[in-house]
Image: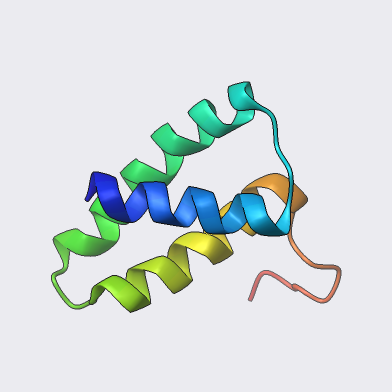
Length: 70
C-alpha cells in the first residue's frame, strides 16, 4: 500500500508542484482514503491510483465549478 501511495504522490507532483509539508499531510489523507477503498477489495492498483489522483486533485485544487454535489 505504501508503494502505491508514493507513486500517486509522485505522479501528482509531476502535475502540480506542492511543498514538503503539504505532501506529508497529503500522504496521511490519501493513505486513509486508499485503505477505505481497498477494504472493499473491489479495486486493482490501477483503479486505486486513478481514484487516488482524483482525490489529491480535489484535496489541493477543490471541486470543479461544474460539480453539483449530486
